[in-house]
Image (cartoon, rainbow, N blue to C red):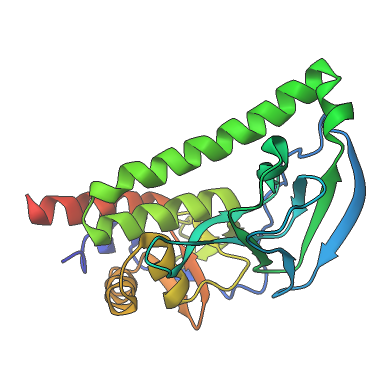
Amino acid sequence: MISSFYTAQQGSAALLPATSPTRRQAPRVAGAIVTTSQLQLKRGETLYEEGERPSAPYLVLSGVLRVMVTAATGRERLADLAGPGDVLATSVFDASPAAESVVAAADAVVLSIDVHATLARVRGRQDLAAALVRQLNRSREMADDLGLPMGARICRILARVAERLGEKVEIGGAEGERPTAEWRHLPFSLTHDDVALLAGCARVTATRVLGELKEAQVLDGHRGSYSVVPSALDAAADRYVYEVL
């Protein structure tokens, strides 16, 4: 197991309360993409549902949204977590119904994209294409993880989500010591069920792996509110792979 691999790295550091996170600087999301109306969503509100035909794609300005799809088995799956800079309702580009449902995981703000005005500008085309490529690369990374042991898959999913959407949280070591690691707090609820749906595993498996990561002191929190050390999660993923070799 991985219960001791991080102890030497962490030393006597302890996670300070997540009430005073250092917020990451939000990426520049509008750029040359032309937007029109702004829509504010409260946690749990639906932006659009599978089968609908949104009138325009959306650019996420702030917050986090769950992207849910229906698998071939009929089971609902959490395909992605969208954050600032991501483009939603891309089915608009080929005039097809949405293949996913999008629900706010935390309070969020999205902007409607004026596709024609955006594509008429060189920088608009570049910025829109860059956003879509980032999302395609994220999908490719998740597909690449399918051959990994489940523990490694969960570690890599959590590390990427934390790097992209997490907020830095201060680490306090012993008096006079410098912080020994960079923790990131996930500013939205991520339950065991969510982790299972992201990784494509049973909830009991997600619960077991999250428990092991807690014991290894690379994950802190409970009831959906978590902080993690992305670099340590990458190392933990390697250890899960080594265990099956």
